[in-house]
Length: 450
Image (tube, helix red, strand yellow):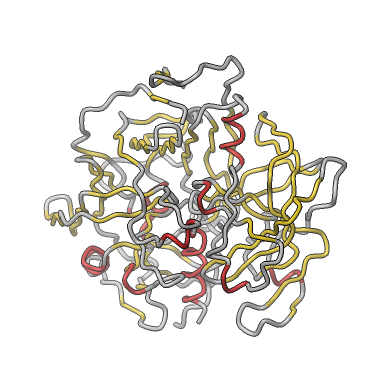
């Protein structure tokens, strides 16, 4: 989900092939929707129509529910639990009004816990449309209560992870401390679209680079059932794995895929392309478009942050690294299935609205949420790739993002931001039938404001 401002630190198309047994459906289609980047290129929102109203919702591959703030919702301070003005929750003034297509879900409620807050309320069936693709009677959350989690533009969130971590609970669920558990899984929006035969079982993201001094700008593309209109390299394919650290009681006692998780070969970094160190210790991580910070093993993070010129300084209170806003960023890449995906140096430094800069790489060992320690690959990586999330084949595909179709917004050059040693892989996109990402993002902002 959405990242709160980090501002309080002290000082086109590709041919499709189908696996055996996957039914063809003439209604399968795709749609591409431009995104809005907010909070200086750290948050990415998409227009979604719910009932007869259109809202901006945060695009989040790290959680599964679609929810919107209800008219008259209550904003709660996450520390004191006191009621505070609605405006302090930072959501848009546009909130949900009951429409003629609204139907409450009987005996269930919506409740989700993140690292720095929660949202809860009604579970309902509503008509939902993204781009030109509409679904009737989709199960969504309509939040009556929330901690501050908006960006001033969005009114909620579009969750794109697996069904096992959706956040429906029995209607008699009274404790918001157990929203991690007691789940009643349901099909999120894209699963419903696919099951109704109106979209292929995958989506893709291409996030744009935005000027550091622009708080709101073009944010790239979300494409349902296809690829965004951008230039890219060949794809590298990896399986979506069961997230190792997730206990069974997080997934209703069943072994299930949760996040978009996979195992990386390692990382590569150095002060220049002529002076590189490779760390080939594998680690599992999940891809989270709702998180501007990437939480990675400390052996990699500490080394990379020491290579800023001047070096980044660790802030124990926040668990983050403070950097000079004009620092020269090191070379840094993640190795995925023998392909190295380099980060553009500008994506390794985040300048807050107060002018303080932090490294966008933090140690996963320094934070936990719900008692878990997880590696998370966030926006700094996604701004340099085209990422395909295929829930039909349970795989992800990554390609180097070369440039946007309009000739420039977000393109990356050689060195930081390129891909090398691409493994042999087909550009054919294969399809078959068949939680916390935002929470960690919020945890980062919570830590930074502590």
